[in-house]
Length: 163
Image 1 (cartoon, rainbow, N blue to C red):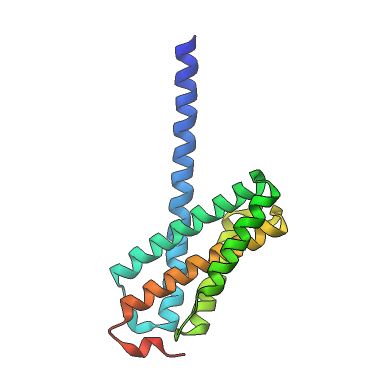
Image 2 (tube, helix red, strand yellow; image 1 turned 90 degrees about the vertical axis):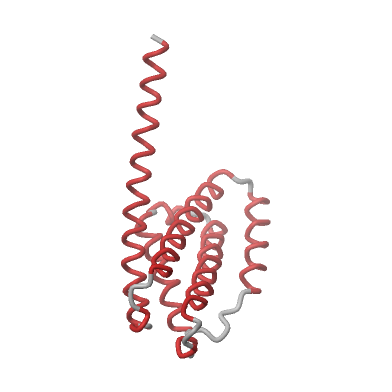
């Protein structure tokens, strides 16, 4: 009997992992497609660059991970820990600068990432005010990381860094 229960539990875990993998796959595909569209809108000469594709895959995973992390923290952390984390993230994001990057592009990427977060994580609506602000700070952090890396890929052509 015990063996059967272990097999049943293992089967359930494997099915849940498969669902999670499918969810991640769908998110990464849509995220990459949408962001490639934005990139082509702002930088049509960038073409199909495998470095940008890899960067978008990493960005998508960071958005997934940070969204799930913030949702979990908002549900399980005591208030003082949420306050501390928000304070740290606020200081960190405040220090980040967009530099000479195209502000319209930076904002469009950030907004699109947030739209996809809400589309795939409906329970974002249930976040506390601190959880919601923490999610925004995380999104800005990963946006900044993506933008910095994106422009470093395009760096040989300085015309990309115009305002």
